[in-house]
Length: 497
Image 1 (tube, rainbow, N blue to C red):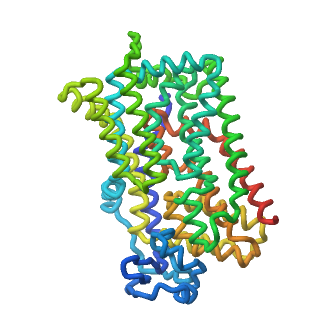
Image 2: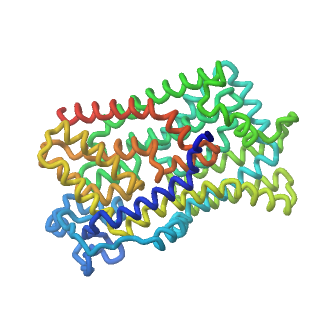
Image 3: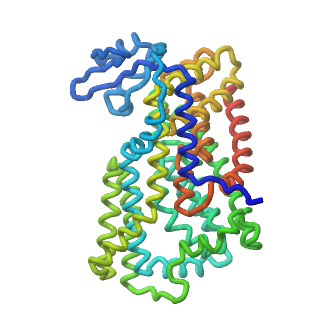
């Protein structure tokens, strides 16, 4: 009997989109009223079901709406998205999505995710150009020799640096660029590609899960909860160190096992396929000339400039994409690549990541179906009602689980914060605990499920390396369970402190 093959990432997401479409027929439609701040007019805009009202931007207005957030959080730009207004949920006439809506959702998702899709495609073109110069192979050979016998340093260094980016500025989508770059380095160190995926994706995930000063999760969620982002900071620092240590131990143990016996690799059957995908010049030794060194310097500078721009200059996808495009052109000049060869190589490189771009768009399409079907707010409304009458410890654990479930439907950390915090954070007052517990539950629940969330970035990340979701689940599940148990224990204990 022929074994059943696990479906591709695109198929998994289309199945999920189909199931969410069916949910719109089963879950009642409903919506909260929203409030947004207009900086130009210095007024609030309250959007109801059929009405739009302008209100004075004062603390009194916020108090009247039962929003316990300081006014300056809106006026200084900390809260820049519309927030849900507590106690305004209203059931609406059902808006079930049909087959035609299901078919349109991937297209709508691709249009909505155009910014990150173009970033991925331009990065693919840049990688195609740098690969064609041979600079990658020369640099990787040098690094492999330098780390011989101390390859575990590579695991610690990459995971820790990526986690640092995650905890400080939400380093997530940008990590897509690092898989084609770093996977060959891990292969040269006699690890398998799964080690490289784990270091990059888990590093980012744990960093964002235990965000300390991340403006897109910690700060915006704390602001929306009406508390200072420094409240509960040391608890999140402890979680970051503890979870990162647990993950490093797990990855290093797996990596050593693969180094000693390659057949122990979860993706051993794909070893040759992946090696061929990431190794361009197996048959010849590439000399590390001054041109190749300069090309690699420009390549590295693209990422340094990108990170600096995001952190210090408030850059986003347009600026990041332009940086990589300029980098590709500069490398083309340095390596003296002919104009026609440059275009062909760039387009081929972009084409290699087209599948990844489509996965990102289809995943966004799932969110489109929920928004059009008006079920996101309904799920939030019923989730908030589940915690009524709970004791402190159960409340903290339940809130973490609720946020994990909601993250399937609202994978955006900033979107989750502004939509849920005005509703969820006041529940902490009724239980008698600090609102920072709800902020932490939001971060940990969102972060834990992110490890396996098919509507997040994991399927796109795996697609870059041509690794199946089933293989990832086999690798991550033991660590996932350990981190869940550890997190729930920490949340329960912290609720009584």
